Image (cartoon, rainbow, N blue to C red; front, side, top):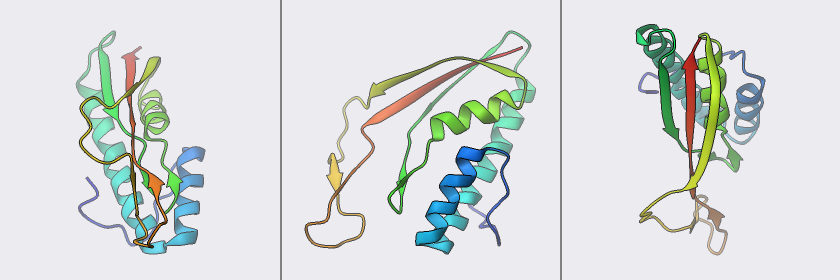
Length: 131
């Protein structure tokens, strides 16, 4: 997803996603376009999956809320929103620690010595049911 970069940041219906992309764009316009490309493809993917699930069926997505340019992208909430727009009901979002994590809990995304930020430590299991 996000393989074909958009020329402009997509205009999403999700207020949360639009606000997050605006904050990323303030720091780095090119990176905002890359993130936008991912979510544009992600939304299309969810639309395709939604078509294949029968009424009463479930979709369970395990996602992480990445941080880009200091902005946490609430992918769990965005996933819920995308499915709701396809006629799904949100059942529950389970938050849990990432099991057997091998990456460090902090890194230096800016490559500035001593400036560290937390990495993804939780995953979100978004459970949706088609109405």
